Image (tube, rainbow, N blue to C red; front, side, top):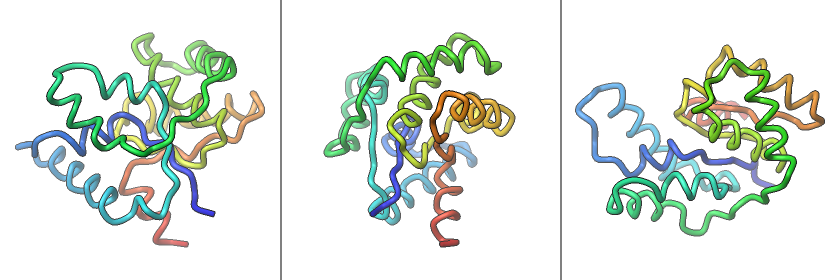
Length: 161
């Protein structure tokens, strides 16, 4: 059985955007494309309606370019547990209110027992300071927390096993 991965919106943003002139962003884009082209088949991928909604927003042409990558990726089940866990994150993790969709991504992955949450959102999701709070809250609520990681981290994890 393949490991499961919740693919958060920022991954699709990096896949669809034009190559950046900023070195760090261009490098992240290339790493993301490498993972997508050469590593994603090793995993069972999932998204949520939150990912679909975020990828659908904004410029219609850019939205269509993002949505192409979602084709065939199953949507995870939504439940009251997702909203409850998200509210707990917002109440107990030092996050701004604008991060509410970010907590929904984490809660969706946790309540659906997804092993990894893949993201480039290092401010509100893959933040090392916040991870310990997120993991504790997941465990207290009875869920195994997803391993929150970026594309280079998940590629390193896989290569070690």
